[in-house]
Image 1 (cartoon, one colour):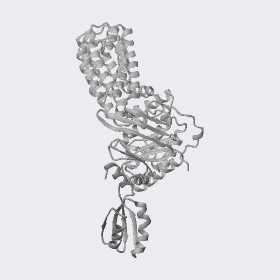
Image 2 (tube, helix red, strand yellow):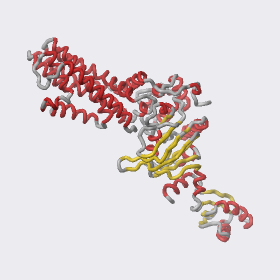
Image 3 (cartoon, one colour):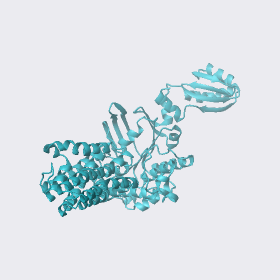
Image 4 (tube, one colour):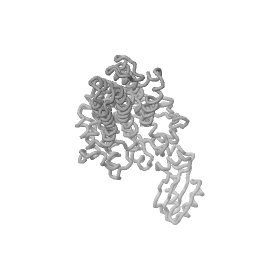
Length: 302
Length: 253
């Protein structure tokens, strides 16, 4: 539904996005990157708000910059906290629906308010809303046209934990309905919850894409770090070194922290080894299988 | 519960018709522009014209002096400044506060957005300029010719200034600074230097209308009535066309 082909974007001498290519279909995809990585610029190009300096962007088979009709099938939740503050939430959503040519703007606005649980305050001016409520209004406004492609730029900013969970569940429902939902965030914990399909962008370049657990597996040249809780850490550590299962380790009172280059072999043998040694294993926890580790490896090179 | 609209399967590909888009743009921009402080401030500025007209009328000034007052204070200051503030902000403010995306990223053409915005600016500019400037003409007591000429010149100037400053607002980030430079430096100073330069100053056309309707003696005001009316309207149409093109081709935040 989205095809980005060798896209670069320059602002004068500044390279905001550099030679990025990817394709996205139905479902939820997370775009991860630190602030200033080029996420918003990429999103602006996907919506046609700015043209690529090089390459091409194709959304639903059309150029979003020049194709008027495709703009009715795409929605954007912009990062900036900008709304028509004098309008009530209902009025803002009705305006969004009317400008999308929706046949029943009042109905669409009412439904969208319900999706973000703001029906009770629909008559209040959005200028009086908290940041979190304004975020929800923006998300609701993006739903009034029943979009096939939904692009959300840091949509969880300002939301409390309950609303974050609710919003992430909403994204998954939208993805399950066959829409293409692309969500950006610089918060790793959020991205892990938003979806396992991840695009990682740093310094304007797409540094990785795919399931973030698979991404970690692809980096076999780096050691995996695992924490082992053991009744006798020293005995276990000594045996692991003797068997050549680890490339490095450290020990404290209860745990052995090991680095291994062959996580599969390690996983197969560690339990049997413990039994053989008479050491009780209380915990086997991969420490770098989370998104933060992936991000650190990919972006920061460590 | 599905998030899809009940009629999703039956929906044709949507776009917003030009007429509807003009109305929506007009409504949004009108409401954005309607600020009490802005209207009060500009109204106070506009009151300079009738106060000056009253003072001149009380002094039994000549027709030439009366026309000169209308041309300089009314058509040369009040009209363009009020038009600049409203028309420049019509799209310029939306772009600056980053709400333009809510009109831009929609299945509608660009020109209705620009036309709707210009109409909204014109709606607010008209009462704040036409009433005081025509009142100034009446208060000078210089006769009916000056009233009719002032009315026509103000309307023609309003159309042209609103369109040109709407373009400024679309194109230039510091549209107020550039607009004031145009009004005060170009029209108020450089264009006074000679007939050739004055041709590309809107003020020359509104002055020409005044002279044509009153027979007053005014410098740099020698266009025929037809030319003085048609050229500003053509300029307005061209400005809106360029603004529409520019809106479609510029980067939006």
